[in-house]
Length: 302
Image 1: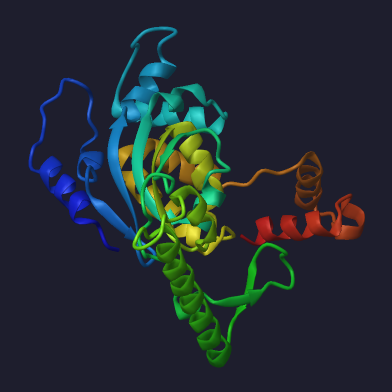
Image 2: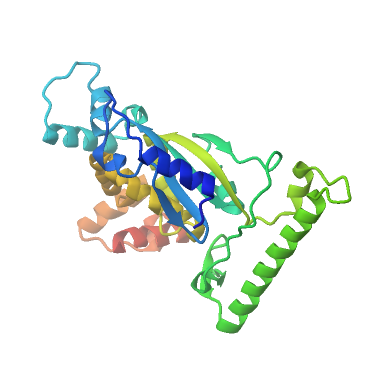
């Protein structure tokens, strides 16, 4: 990961000038403020600001009847209750603002989560850096034969080497042409907003991404899942580690009920009840399709 001199100077200045505040702070999150966490080959995630903590979640949940009894045990139990029963509003009381540097094709996946505020680096006004995501050898895989949107077996050495050479050569050639088109040396130079169309999807972009905890948990549930695409999953895993330090009670409940839990249909629950009674249940007498049964078996096996 490479930070620009300006970005590094900003980080150094902010970390060197701590501010006193009367608002609630989370010690675990304070350690992450203005620190860049490396992701992929040139990417990063850093916390710009945040609001709230575990106590803010409980405060919002208790607003209808006042403070009441309050202890660490009660706070954790309340948060687990809220998570278990799919309450969302109390978790919306916490927010986080991140600065993320990521490949464009990852950004296009990420932006599908439309419940955040986003401000992206503009290639209409600025010139993008010559930085491209080139996968590590072990992350080059063939198309999966069972999942139309996933990867299968890792490519062999010869094919992987050929693919890497193509990726590097195409990215470099596209950027050379990008520079040539916008250059004003002996020519008018094509507008940046037009020249950017020729850049590959593995070039890096940057954005500020602000989201509340409820919607962030939804993002993490999908993108930190082992089935998510590797390139976005590593960003989600990095953010998840930050969130675990920020709101430890809420994150533990999220891990337990969302990441580690499972949602079962009425048909699946009926099958489990039949199994508990000693009945032999198969796909043929379960009432499920082959796909549903396969997923059901996956839940039971863990």
